Structure formats: structure tokens, C-alpha cells
Length: 225
Image 1 (cartoon, rainbow, N blue to C red):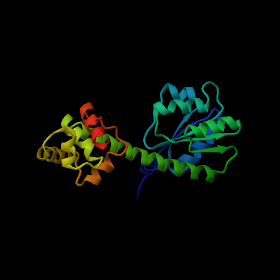
Image 2 (image 1 turned 120 degrees about the vertical axis):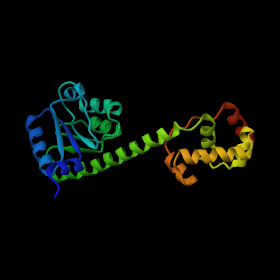
Image 3 (image 1 turned 60 degrees about the horizontal axis):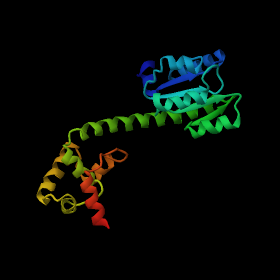
Image 4 (image 1 turned 180 degrees about the vertical axis):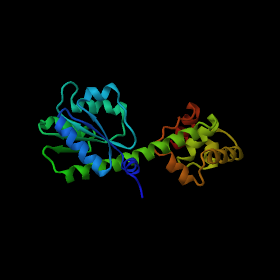
């Protein structure tokens, strides 16, 4: 049977930032009873003094607080914890504040008073988003490490591979021999641990591959034209 620590680790971490002590206590009791780990802060500035964000995590954020506002902190989180979902809780917010919060990527906006079930549903949805973001970040880190193994020449070949160019087409672009391109292609697949070209393309979606040498790009443009 799993103990409470195992359950908390599985459910994730909820960071509550609210200047109302009674709200903090109530949320902490409710969330810990379900099995979440909880961190409490009485204002955004207190959190910013030591912005520790475990993974996966969700931030429950009040809109109106002394010092830095909720949307002000949310804006800073784009740098501090870009992939951590933010849920706003507020009893007094202007429409423009809500619009700003949603434009900045808030998962939801809970108006006080709200039901425990409504909050739990939103947190569960946001925690799933956080878990997916952690998986994606781990994947991107692994792919980045594999890309570092490629030589500059292999990186260029990789660039053309994921765009669907054949060995002969790549050779035509940069003036190399088709047999040499085939060798580079094989090394790219091996170093990237990709079994098929579609798998390589899939793992590099969203990754910022360096552009090929200027001459190669010029040759390609001329060929297309």
C-alpha cells in the first residue's frame, strides 16, 4: 500500500499565493487531505524572494495583494517558471485584469467563493498540463544533448533530412558526393538514436536547428526558383 508521501509525490505540488491567511489555511487543509504537497506564501513578493518551483506543480494565485499583483507575478513567471500552469483565485477583479491574466496564459480564473470540487477539477487539469510539460522538457533536453554529438557537417545534413530531402538532393545543394551524404545521414540517425526518418522528424519538432551555411541556402533557393 502506498504511504501519504508516495501519494503526494504522485499528485504533485500546489503553490498557494494569497494574502488572506484564512484562505491559505483552508486551501492547504483541503489540498493536503487529497494528497498534494502544498507551499504557502502571503504575497507575490514573498514567493519572489525564493521562487522554488518543484515539478510537476501548479500555482494558485490571488489577483489583489500588497506589492506585486497577481498578473505582475504571472508575467515574471514566464522567465522563472515558464511551464508551470497558473490558476487565479480572486474575489475582487476588474474585467481588464481577468482578460490580461487569460491572455498571459492562465489556465482558469476561479471567483470567490468557489466550490471545492470546482477548484479540484481545475487543479487536476492544470497538474496534467504540468506533467506533460515536464515530459516534454525532459525530451527536449535529451534531444539537445544528442544534437551536440553531431559535427557541423552532420548538422547541415540533418537540417535537410528533416525537410524531406533525399541524399541526391542534398548532394546537389551543397556539391558533395551522394555516397558521402549517405554516410553522414547514417551517422545522424545513429547519434540521434532514431530508427526511422519520421521518428527523427518527430523528435526535432519545435527544436531550433542551426541553419545551413549561407552558400547552401543560396544554392537551395536558386534550385527552387
